[in-house]
Length: 256
Image 1 (cartoon, rainbow, N blue to C red):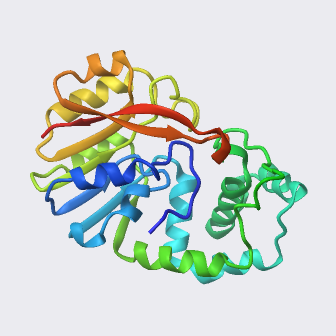
Image 2: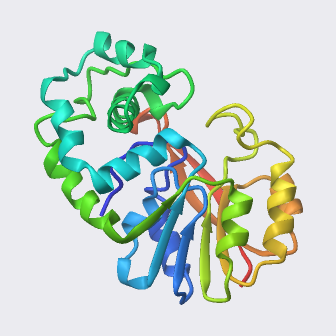
């Protein structure tokens, strides 16, 4: 199953390389869920319990609305148009004045139609080479499977350190995909900072469970996490569109 979201830093291409490396476990936790590609790509029977977490409340609200209120969510799209004017009308709305379902609709619309799925200052995306990513005629069909997949998934909105320490057990597996070094503010100001890489390392040194962390392949990261095992894997980035893919290497850091 694919994720229903385009999201900055999504792992659609890397997931098939990571999933075979996941060890046997009982509880699965995605600490920085984003588009949750790993959850949707892996076999749900791999895990007895599944938890996804993200600090972005708008994103978490979207997950919860699709899990619990899909019919009402879809109803809002019956009279919505795919247009630049509609996009910027949504962007100007203050989320705190909306209901949870309205917040979810707004966030989903901006993500699907924004350039490179930017969280900060999204701009309308239009191209002569591709159709809009939001197909209003197929939205119910596309989201019904996601609704069913999320039925037994716990959805959290907590800081990463709280999630790791709270759910750490010998039979827990953590997939960790933090903002990349040099990209800390892409998901919002003050959410994740340079010093958090050291803080995260110290937490991971003491956990009972197992983890895989995907991170950009830089000498500074290798030095920070030199106490763990890591593998270099090939992937590509396509934030500017499928015709602008950039081949890169990433690190998979592990404690097993």
